[in-house]
Image (cartoon, rainbow, N blue to C red):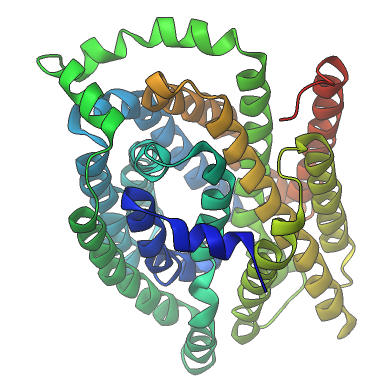
Length: 416
């Protein structure tokens, strides 16, 4: 049966092909670790408020590197910036997490991990700059799918958790992430080339240092905020990012500490999340009119609110909690993957191609600045009651619905 995502996958060329085809290595490395980061910190002895504070430090580090990411990407080129900063943002923290013994290990790892904002800019430029505009939503969907291929190795994770205790099992996942992520960096570097826009921007940056290049942000900010579509995309992406951060940080905490789910069952929930995301992207997403963003955004927000409500209302006692948790995950996974795809596509469609690196950098910096306090706030709320971070999420999602309705009521003729 014909499927637009499969067609997009087969039609990829050049850097888009190199980026998408190596992206499964992300799913088989770091995505195996992410669901258990909070559980790992709890097992080592951190409190909820410390976990939230680490999330805030990570966000503040991202804020600094997001500011520098545009000039760095233009100065080094998309390809070199991605390779260099992927190593320091992901491989080095994996080694720190692997040997972590207390709060300060996670603090140090969060500082390095914030460098990922450089590769958020450089890698996205490498991914789409030479691609056809019509391919961009499909490419973003493929990236989401590739990141979820960790489901193939999730049974091994389940075995680790059942045979070992939490700490040694997760340490194995982190050293695995270091090895596979290093392999991904090397393969992508050798199978990619600098983009056409990257070559132009690198030549324009020659003889200028990073801070001289940063001085050009004023003009970019003015241009960016003159585009109502860009401002709308920024607000929606910021809301989705905060909700995603809180969800990823505290979901395993509420499941393990409030609902008392045994450790050996924890790996099965990411399996459900990955399967739902993959099914959505291949079965449902190709049949959606991706340019009808209003109804799709509203649909995603409502689905995610439903998932958060089910999580909050999950009973602590009885086996029915597993059915309710599973249903909550279905709604969550469906909505988060859908909203992520829409938000990244909105930004890609509205951004000025001539200033893509610096606009991406500014957008990411503003998003990180908005997100920064909410890791710590979420940790404080979780220490009072582990349902409170998810009530905060529902509040943000309701704001997202209001802003979407307000924007499209003034721009009814907009197709995106």
